[in-house]
Length: 334
Image (cartoon, rainbow, N blue to C red; front, side, top):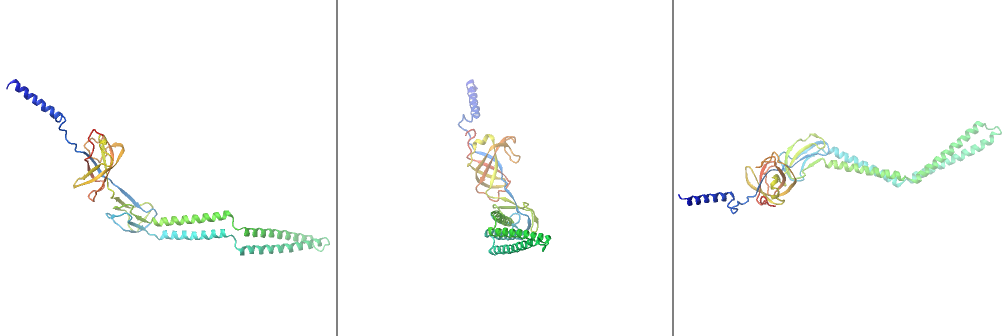
C-alpha cells in the first residue's frame, strides 16, 4: 500500500469523524419531537355538610354515585326549624300590632275616659274648696275645732293634686305615642323580620345539595345520626372539568405558552386524550416527589394546569399521566 493511498484513507476517516461530530455539518439535524411533561390528574374534592345542627332524616345517595349539580344528597329533620319559623312569624305579628297601635295613637274612648276622670277630680276639688271655706269661717267662733279645719285644708290640697294628675293624664292621651316609642316599635318589627329570615335560612340549609357534578367518594354519616354544623356528611369529587397538574423544567419554560395543544396518556390506557395548557405558574418551585422526570429532582420546575377536553371515566383523580406537547417551541428559541 503506497503512501498516497494511506493519506486518502486517513483523510476519509477524518472526514467521517467530523461529519458525525457536527451531525453532517448541520445538514442532518434530527427533527424536534416536541416536549414531554409529567404530572397527575388533579384531585378536586369538596367536603359537604349541614350549616345547622340536627338529626339526619334521609340520605339519597351512596358512595360511588354519580350526581349532577343541584342533586339533593341529604336532609335534616325539618320540624324544629319549621317551629322556629312559626315562632318568628308570631313575633312579627305581635310587632306589627304594637307598631300600628303606636302610630294610630290613643283611642277616642281612652281620651273620653281621661276627660271623665278629670271632670270627677274637678268636682271633688270644688267640694273640697267649699268645705274648707265654710269650716275656716267657723273656727273663730269655736263652732269647728282647729284640728278639723286643718284636716279639711289637707283634703283640699289632696284634691288639687289629684286634679293636676288627671289633667296630665288627659294631655298624654290627647298627644298620643312619642316619636321615640314609634321608632322603637319599628325597630322591634325589623328585628322580628330578621329573626324570621334567619329561621328560613336555617330551614333551607337543612338540605345538602351537590354544588357541582361529580362522584360521591365517601358517605361519612347515616340517617338518624345527630350532626353538628359543618360536620362532614359527604365527600364529593368534582369530575368536570377534568384538569391535569403538570410540571415543566426551568430551562424549558420558554418552549410553551397558554393555549398550546397537548396530548395526555396514562399507564394501562391505550387512549390518547387531548387538551390545552390553561395556566402556567409565575413562580418556580422544587420538583414534587410525586412527579417523575428525566432530570434531577432538585431542579426548579414551574407548575402548569392542563384542561382535558375529551375526558372519560378511565382517567381518575390522582392518576399519574404523561403529557406530550408536539407544538412546543424548539429548545433554545423564544
